[in-house]
Image (cartoon, rainbow, N blue to C red; front, side, top):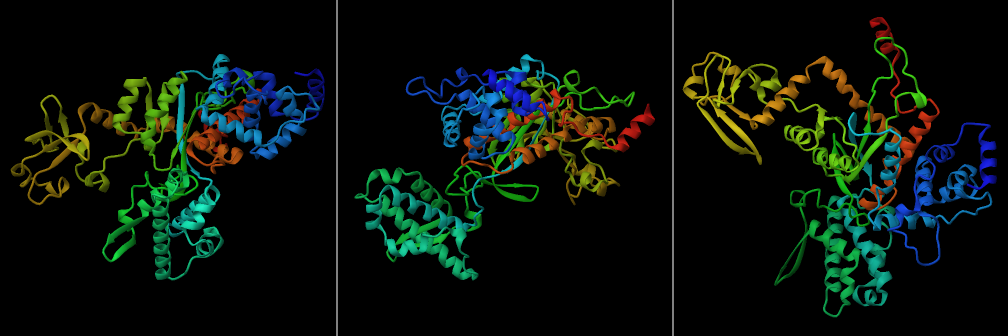
Length: 565
């Protein structure tokens, strides 16, 4: 640290709130060492900017939600950043393009999570994060850095993007392959710069014109006399995939006929491209809301959930002597079609790799199933504190009659007993919707004369049928459902709700809701840097004795605690 930089920066900082960048340097020192990035930055050639310094700049950039140009400007003129980076006061900084090149190198060498790993390692050494304890996880949608396009616009824009790529890569070949003047009028402007026809028939005709032109271009690219490298262009590959997904073509003696695929013939959402520019983005649906892009799964520590001592009603001491702040321990980014349940095990693998597995993990019902509850306990030693889906039988949904819980199951005798004391006559393992199950049936001769038959089954002639999961899973499921009705368990499960505040902070501070970059890897890199920025903001607040990540207790809750005391 240059002496003059330290002296001047501290003198200026003494007149107001101590800057985040300076606090991080004082508390954590050189957080990101150059040696940690040696794999991506070779030692040969002219020395460039320190990758450790660029990593810190990028983190602070997300802490203030700055563009690359604005971040470079802050390094050039901001005294707090010069202090954090250990620069002379007259250091001119760097060009904004250096940040883009830095991120590209990290992605190319698979180092997207390096900065989060380094921060968590430093915090583990200080005892601020550790294995065991409690953590919580939730997901939210992320909009891709592309426009939402309907199927007509998607076809037109994909063809236009391919023509642009070919015009740059092989202009002479393209001039001889297509009618440039006609196609320039049709595909020159971007699809969002004009309105499509209002008539349904005219839109259909336009879609077929796009389809015929796209097939014609693909035929020209794959012709024997065309340069073979043209078909390897990414834009041509996207065009081919998009046309397979959206069009049919039949060739007969009368010629080629092009038709659009019906909605029922489209490929599943996980395979279907949503943009010619970001081929990783997918269409997502959650709680009735559609979006194009990704999902992010955020995990954070949540020990000491209550800021008040229930016995005294006094506030817990804050600052360096108080409870540690909530810190993000894992970030996972997927395309928008991946369900939360599919990420339960990968999230635990990520936490295990950092030696940060919790003892209790608070999740919403989207992450849970009986198999996952058993599997996470068996494989990772983690107890999932989560709601599970309730019984979906007609009796349970109606809240009347005899649902499955009214029957006594004797697993050893492989028999079920109904509320009136009759026993089942059929017990057989089966596979229902791809999962193992046990089917139990009662004899129709037993059920037919039963006076409460209408409350038990809707079958007019047969007996009652039950479907169970294998014993271990069914017992876990029954226990979880029973817990959900307990008020004390519900109050404990309220700890999970705090993750919503973290998601709000991530969206409000770092702009996490909208991706800055194209592609899943760069979007994940963005999310990792955002997580590190949020952790530093929370640590800064904790160091200064007023953590911002704690849920404020309402006046009503305070009154209730004081009366209880």
